[in-house]
Image (cartoon, helix red, strand yellow):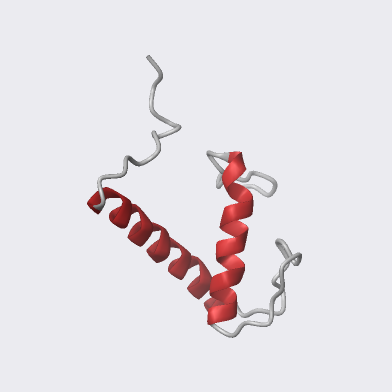
Length: 84
């Protein structure tokens, strides 16, 4: 992929602050020395540890969705689904 082509755009832009909070919460649980406000620069964190944060974020989001389904809550609609 060429430089400057970012394909991992957020589908729901309003989710960005919540995802950031989750990212820093998990980083703190793992004992990583990052702080809120270091936004996208984690240059001092090894790739293995940064990947662990992303992996745990995915697991936690899946668990939250499963809990919502189990309790009968409706999941939000898929923003990529055709309207109509």
